[in-house]
Amino acid sequence: MSEQKYFSILTEYGKQVVLDALRGGDSTLLTTMAFGWGNHDSINGGYVLDPIKDTELRHRWGSVPLDSLRRDPDNKDLLIATGILNNDFVCEIGGPAKGHWINEVALLDNHDETVAICSWPAMHIYIPISEEGSAINTIVLTISKLGILLKEET
Image (cartoon, rainbow, N blue to C red; front, side):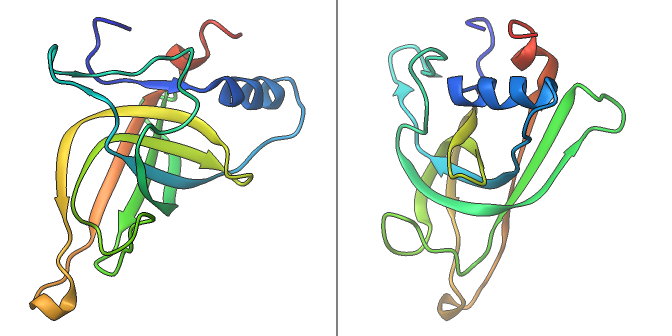
């Protein structure tokens, strides 16, 4: 994983959820996409993600309901999640989503627990509000390799 700059990991909770579902137990619903500015390593120029210690986003500033969650029709090993930040999106830390970075994205379940964390290239996001004379929606898409996430656990 150290060779890849951007990647997805299952949290320890996420591994248990997936293993339980694979064994025929209760399944969980992925319902939410959360955003954070992460822990950027300014010396090495990369995102720092510790698959053993990281159980949630380092600096979460917002979340939205998942707009879609599907497997890639051409590669069943890829899980594609989409979330939409509308122009009226309000940050969890207060105020509109203006001037925030997205360096990390998480997928949460219906129990509000973090199942997976994805590192991201730094993306500065500014969402104008209608009062400024413009309004846009921002679509955030993550693609996770399921086979790599589950390889050690199955």
